Image 1 (cartoon, rainbow, N blue to C red):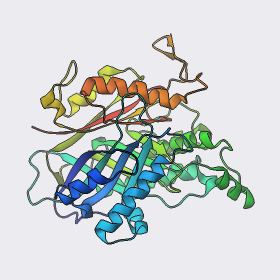
Image 2: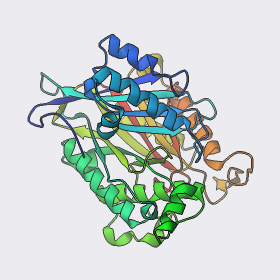
Image 3: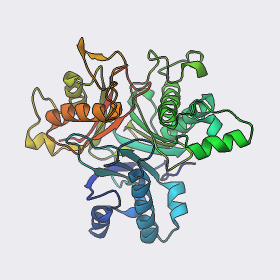
Length: 377
């Protein structure tokens, strides 16, 4: 299911980065609506970084989604169920280190003027069907995700796949209840470990993105490779799993000649968690040249920074041992978000960065995509 404005007219994408006091705090978003900065009817997606643990029992994600859906339902005179069907809500738990909880509100509206430049930020959203528990982490999820990504690209009027720079997917996970449901129907599941199911769901979703973008050939992707073959990856996928949904919600961000506005997006791929040069490369793709931390004028042009974080399975970073995978007190993805968030924050001079943990098939092992949305001068 997709929705959008008349493709015969130019459209404009707006991105608003909004602070939150807690996962249920929608007051800053409401204030922008009241001030006329945001037209609630134009919202197609909301991404959020919430301050939970990012694991199976991180209900801050569901709390934030519920609060946003109820607020928008009141504002738009609709039911929360209608909001759920039409607006993608992608909540990523975990703001370890210095990361700041925040929302990214993405709006699409008609533009009365033609584009000022060759290409501008374009966005499209789409949803898969609801998945059965036995489909998670398997080829059914890969193939459905690929189809939803293609729908979102078409909705965004992006003609060249090279112009797609970031694909955000929110995907489900297995709970003990969902596993039991599959067993009652005589079905098997990809794993009985609910935490491991998060990784398999992210992995299948990322491979779906890679197929849709032509980064991998269909013959290269088999069920046995999901979550296992680290040589298969997308440089533009960001997938995040959560207990609050049973389908995949897809947001495609790229650049298109059919869109107006002063925002553009670019990306690079971090090869490991401390790949600062890749962050600088991503900044350079949107005209922000930097060799140290960005200055205030450059910082003011940034609309959003989005990245993936993953502890290297090798147990080392540049031949030095790391303990992220051996710490029984703190889950490894929490360590990874903290270190990647710190590296990017040092470069951009801001801490409200969308850093999502768990990068299975999203960049090389231990690395991941980093994308920047910025205003052009």
